[in-house]
Length: 252
Image (cartoon, rainbow, N blue to C red):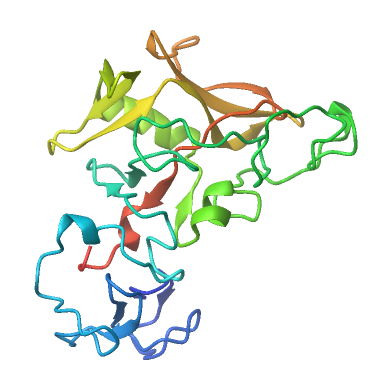
């Protein structure tokens, strides 16, 4: 099987054009300008970027191809390799720095909120008894704010992914730029900082609740031996996206 390094779609070795994005097999995209280019190109024919030259720090948030792994994530957002099945974003949706809290959302909604109740929650018929069935997992769907806002392969993390982060990383209570939160250190020496707050996960619980995790003075808030709990979908919470590690081409 081949994996398209532009859109991440799997297809047969005998197929030379990706059936999902219609780009030739082996295509990649220019990190600097987002143009689709051949894997064998040493220079981007669009912006003449030298693909062999290491990227300077100010170029790390360069324009992205929306079909590529990093989509249209904001400048400065990195996908941090912690040696896990998914990479974690360096900051929250709506933030530009790791210590910023970002925007607040009701579960399954993709527009920022300052308040929400059952009467104006867009994923129900006006009451907690009339919540719409959005499926068993909204990751990567039209209800996933990370996918809608950042495109590419970004998504809301799942219960399994947050447990993997906690279990396989060393998570310590710290302050970063005077903001309290948790820093998770991986065995490869990479780390992410997550500021205090409550964060949605991608899986619902019952018909009108969804899972979330909390970062507070306890670190990861552990309830009954697990970092994952659930609450009504109308609660406003932050989003820390993840992205499939397998989606990355070698130019990342």
